[in-house]
Image (cartoon, rainbow, N blue to C red):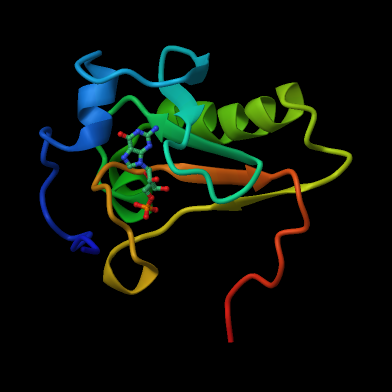
Length: 125
Ligand code: 5GP
């Protein structure tokens, strides 16, 4: 079920549990503000999720409330993770779903990094 991105942050969500170490994840990157791990149900040969450590429901919440330091760390981490994974030559896609029409399912901001094959059109027609 897609989430309502205007809801308050709910720290029982699955990514909050991963951040607290209550659920395992296949980690690819971590710094003071950011964690990244492989998606449990990959939609491409490379499918990495990048999340801020702070409690933000969505891109909307994050862009409105996060500090400049958190935002810079998040944007730089996405780039760094893709570079470290060797994705620049072949290319990759960064995607963040926000709320109902996007199909966002986990109410903690996450950027998807997709790569490893031609990814097709941005959206199905
Ligand atoms: P959304 O649809 O919210 O943009 O994407 C949520 C993503 O989280 C999906 O691609 C889904 O496979 C992934 N996911 C859901 N639960 C887990 C989990 O427990 N561990 C990991 N690594 N990924 C998860």
